[in-house]
Image (cartoon, rainbow, N blue to C red):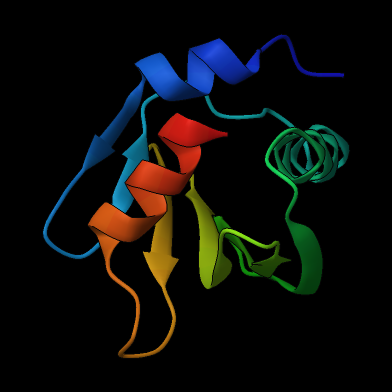
Length: 105
């Protein structure tokens, strides 16, 4: 399992124009990547679905349906650019909405 906490995510999340970047060390193997994504989703009440692997990237659609939020975004982990980020899906959502959700969780 990965060694990160909800507080690590909050301290290392940065909102950008199109995404929320999570500035943490990238997982090193496919298994650790899957575990990272599952742990992240558990911590923030997201449901993981539609995972997709590329040569140097992992993407998954994650959704949450709580009384406070109905969010859908793409979780992206890319080794070539050494980055983890969340991209909102749909026009009703923005990076700042995702960021605020993470901060309040």
